[in-house]
Structure formats: C-alpha cells, structure tokens
Image 1 (cartoon, rainbow, N blue to C red):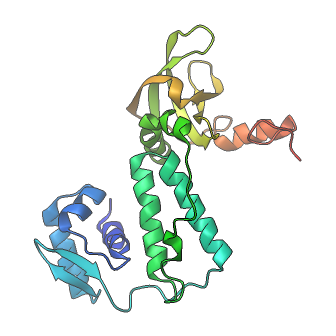
Image 2: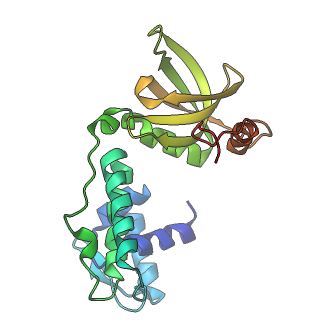
Length: 237
C-alpha cells in the first residue's frame, strides 16, 4: 500500500469521534505500530485535527468531519437494514465494516437524526446463511479484489465426491439460504458457480489473473442476457 493511501485510510478509520489505539489501526492496515505512530505525527504536522497520544489512542476532531448529511427517514432505515443483513450473513471482517460505516454516517448526521440508525426496530436473522460457507467468504472477497486464482476442493451434491479445481473468482452472491461464487473454472474451461458450503478447502494461489476476453464477469452476464436470463438465472423482465 502506498503511504498516501495509508494516510487517507487512517483518517477514514478515525472518523466517527471514537478513540482508536495505534494497535487497532496497525492491525486494520497490516503495518507495524511504529509505522502508525510516524503516520499520525505526519498527519498532525500537516494540519489534520487528530488528538491523542501514544499508548492511549487517537481521535479525529474538528473541520475534517463531514458536514451534516440530509437523509430521509426511509433512507436511514434502508441503510440500517442493509447493514443488518451484512452483519447477519457476512464474514466477521465485512460485518465489522458494516458497523463502522453506520457509525461514520451517524457521526455526521444533524443532531436531531443521530442515533436513529441504532434503533432496535430492525433485525435480520438467517442462521442457515451464516453457516453456509462464510468461512471462505473473506478469502474469496480478497481473491476477487486482488485478481488471484484459488484452488478448491469441491464436493458435488449428487455423488458427494470431492474434485480439485483451480478457479478465477469473479463475483459472490447471497441467495438467502447459501452463498455462491461465480468463477471461470480452469478444469471445465467455462464459467461455473459453486456453493461455498460445498467447498471443503480453499487456498489462494500466488498466480494472478488478468481480464481476458471471454473469461470475465461481463462475458458471463452477456451470455445470460443472450439466453433471455438475468444474472440470477431467471427470465429477464
């Protein structure tokens, strides 16, 4: 990660008016605590209103906080509901990110709106989806982001046999009862969609893949559209 990107991420992580330790920030950005200390010092010297001290923690105050955001009540409820789905269904890292996003939004709302995002009126429960493969969800999210191939051991439903495949993960889908990953399968030399709860093992490889014509998510979606289907395999309206 470039230093400029890391400095930006530190500022974003400190939004919300909550005290953050250098250890928390270092773990989030996967760098040393000493690096965070140097970055915080550089940000303060450049005029960023960060308060705190080493060994205690830091908080961002003052003019860098965003101006109040004008959300309607329905928009706030929609954001809260979306975050609750992520908390209920996704892997721990993504669930934490959803909670952090709500904290940041809440911190920049007008005084009369603050706290509405945290009402107990909206909950999401889906034990089957929680159990259906989010052990691998974080791995596939990162592989998609970094363009890395993944080796999986996949258990078929009909024969209950495990086959080894190398795939290019392209997209992740939540279906309400299971997670799936849409891929380019190098074994079948074609697009394939795998249920995460049937993946016995997954290993991110060093091999990266570049966008290739005929092997990208766009190509997969174009194929579905040519068949009169949407991306969920249903007739397009």
